Each structure stands twice: as C-alpha cells, then as structure tokens.
Image (cartoon, rainbow, N blue to C red):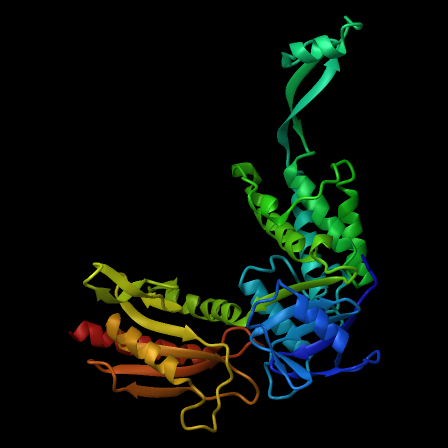
Length: 432
C-alpha cells in the first residue's frame, strides 16, 4: 500500500471543487482520476456530496476523505466567505469534543499547531493521549489459557498431550493453566490501531507520539483484528476505563485499515454528520440553562405517535423531537429542533423550509407545548433572533427562530431569549 503523505486540500462544505483532466500540485481542484476513485468508494454516506458539471460539492458532512495522493479536509462553513480558516477547523474540533468524539484534545497538545494540522492528526493525538493516560494507570490484564511443559503440575494435566509429547521425557508435565497476562484482545486492539495510525500521521510530533506509545506494546502479539471484533469486546468493571480507547481502535480499524483501501490507492474516509454535531452543540449550550431552571433536557424524545391505525390496531408515525425541556411533572415546556443550515436574514421566510415549520407546529400541538424553537448556526455578521406566532395550533404557540455561534463559549444573548420563552410558557401553564 502506498504510504506517501497526501497533499491536503482544505475545502468548506457547500464549496465547489473543480474537476480537471490533469491536476497540478497545489491546485484547488481534483483530477478526473480522483473523481473516479471517489465514485468507487463504498464507505461514504449516500448524501455526503453532489456532482455538478465538472465539479463536486460536499453537503452537511465534514471531516477527511483520502483519495491517494490528495486528501480532502472538509471544514464547516461558519462565515460568509469562501476561504477556509483556522477558526473553521477549531469550531469543528470543539463540536467533535462536545459530541464526545474527541476526549482529551487540547490545542497545542503533542506539539500540534491547529492552524497547520490535519484533522486526522488531531484524532491520532487524542487517541495517543488517552492511551498514555490509561497505560500510566496500568495496562489491561486478563486471564488467558496457557499450555506448556512444566516440571511440576500447574492447573490441570493434559493427559492426551502428555502421552503424545512427553512419552520419552518423564520429567515433563504437559499442563493447562490460566495466567494473568497483558497479551490479550484489549492490548492487541490498541497495538493494531497504533500500527495503522503510525502510517497516517503527518506532523512529526504526532508520528513521534504514536511511536512512543507503540513501543509500550512491543511485548503484545501483533494481531490483525476486524472493527466488529473490537466493537464486541466485553469489558468488565475494571476494564471500562479502556472503552473510549477501544472506540478509537474500532474507528481507525474500520476507516484506515489496509483492507479498506482500493487496490494500490491509499483510500479512506472519516466523515461526520454536521446535523448530529450541531444538535450536540446546541444541547451543550442549553443544558446548563435547563439545570438552572430546574428542568430536564431530553434528546430524541419523549417519543409519541402522530396517528393510530384502527385496522391493525397499531400506532404509526413516531415522533422524536431533537431537544425537549421537561418540568418536574414531566410536562414538556420547550421543544427545539437544531438545523445545520444558514438562515437567510434578507428573506421574508428566513430561508426556513415549510416542512420544518409544519413539523414544529405538529410537535407543539401533539405535545401541547406553546414554546418552540428552531436553532441554526450563526455566521458573520451576527444573525438576529426572530419570534413568530403560529396560527396552526389550537392553542397559542410561539416559535423562536434563533442562532448559536460556534466560535465562542456561552451564547448569553440567545440563552436569554430562550429563558424568556420558557418562563412565558411556565407562567401560562401555572395560570391554567
């Protein structure tokens, strides 16, 4: 397999990448050969990109796609410019950390300069930091079954093997026993994952960090494992501290292992659904507010059904709102949907899809909730917040259309508007 370092082409989602017959080094384009490799990749989500006339555009997915000698690093569009920036990469890293996909990463760790790093280097560095932390506490040990010739009985004597192997050596005893060992599937998974990423790291400081960790596993058997094998490792109570590390191992094996490459091309993808990442980001912003107001935040629930079929006596059309806030009685006081889409401030309808409006209206009616919110990412210049009264419900319903910034911490102005919306709903509920 070709392990030469790819040229990294940084691009924003929704930004067109030209496709040319022959690409020059440093040119913002893909060659027709790269396009063919991309088309043959089976691991990409079906809606990750769209073909245009001699171009390709990535949609709502960010991350990495390696096409051999060129790697696409797709960053979120968080400004109104078409130029990828360091802040876009930092915002994506923050969202990945909030979503639990990055655990320990700190800008500058392992000598990484975020401005010049590859997103893959960030993941590899985070993985190495996790490994170093847990190995400092002690490597995973498991009882493994050992068979060997001994001079005294240990465990149980294997009679058949004794007769077969030691007929001429009466002083030897062929025994089978259990021994606490570090050479087990947990450490074998870590070693295999480190071997894989050692060939993918770009920055010298990251590659050095990988090799330092790999040296700690020299005594572990080199075993090639599948991602499914790693995913199905059953951890006991003492081994659960390795769960995040094994998730990384599964990720790297599933996406970067040599068996995932097409022919001689070094091909892999590491993509993230921005709708899911943004929902996690919005939850992280709203959760402290919910706690402050004595409310419980739920994601993808509580689930209810929109209809009932008499002929089969079954509920149909399950509903699962992105984010709900519930009071102590379990009553829903706010329903919020996070949408990874840029608001159009200059449009009368703000660029909100009619389907999203209908969905929120139905949520409000079915859950008997008078406070709804549609939350979008904020780009520069700062978007405003908008309050709408919905006519579709049988009771008064207010919809807050708002934005959360990705380049800062707590978004106080937006949270104040959400707090006011919830307080209004609570007052209405108390007066009924």
